[in-house]
Image 1 (cartoon, rainbow, N blue to C red):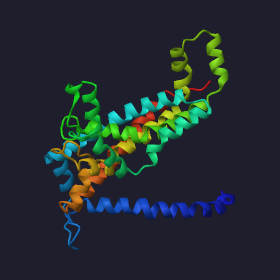
Image 2: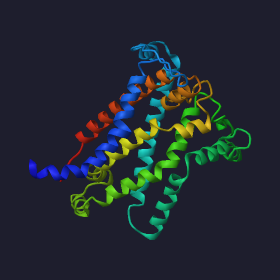
Image 3: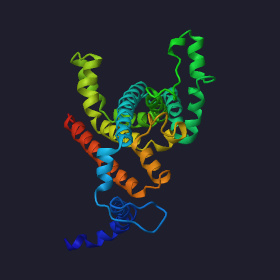
Image 4: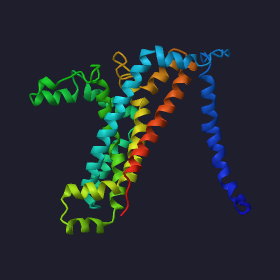
Length: 291
């Protein structure tokens, strides 16, 4: 083992950065979650698990935020993964036209979330928005909605924006995965008389499992961290219909000055994201195959 000791100095800077910027803040948040600190005065009282008990048993807004987050995550993970995979399969060949379309789909990814939010606020505007105007031109007046004002559809309206902004980014991951699949496997499938669906099911999808694992895990984290987009578009409204956990945490800390309570939310938030991500890794890796 002594011969490896010099190598430990190479990982020491990275380890120190991890401890300073992740471990120490996480421990601090855990400590603050056990207090009633308001974020302004130096006094803070130890309240034990009272913040957690209040949040999990007597806070309907937290329960609604959690439910909204699950709806948002399921919508984004399903549709963003589905459409990015379809576009990736359509644009997998490295022709000039395909490269142009890849760049076009990727373009929204480099736009700041705040800019994306303001673009879509105008698109969704119930009076002058292009979406309702377009539906009116098509004589589809029955589909006209207050896309961000109706509490039943507002969270899905924002989820559509999230998908629009990041489909191109996820598509690039799938294209890399598709291009790594040996062409000889498709040739064997063609000789064996496999249909396009059978080829996708037994060749493409199993060998895309590593890429799909990355995509689903990344999209899940992205869904839980969609803070700036929702803050700019609705700030959690109407009637908390678009309040998700990250926004709930922000409101508790900076609107209600309940930093101890917000820290408890952050701890629960971290545990939820870690649990869902580990479950996804376990499910997707179970489907991984090699030929």
